[in-house]
Amino acid sequence: MPKKTPPQFLYHGTASRFLDEIKKQGLIAGERHYVHLSADEATARKVGARHGSPVILTVKAQEMAKRGLPFWQAENGVWLTSTVAVEFLEW
Image (tube, rainbow, N blue to C red):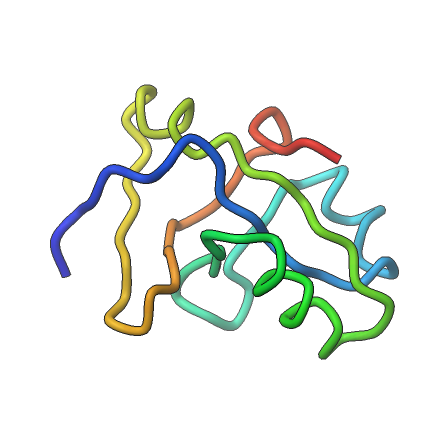
């Protein structure tokens, strides 16, 4: 999959119960190969709702890319990256 330049912001949907851990370590792939990100808040909200009360995090994707962190986009439109440090997240 070729690297791709992301939009300024991407979104990650998660459950509120995971926020304390995310605030400590950022977003990590966990059991997946990549962190999955959405291009819009509505999609991220649907993803987050699968795990409980949804919370949407904004990812400063272009800032990450400018620092050399890679992004890819899957055929289904999902954006992928290896990790998102806390400094690139907006609550």
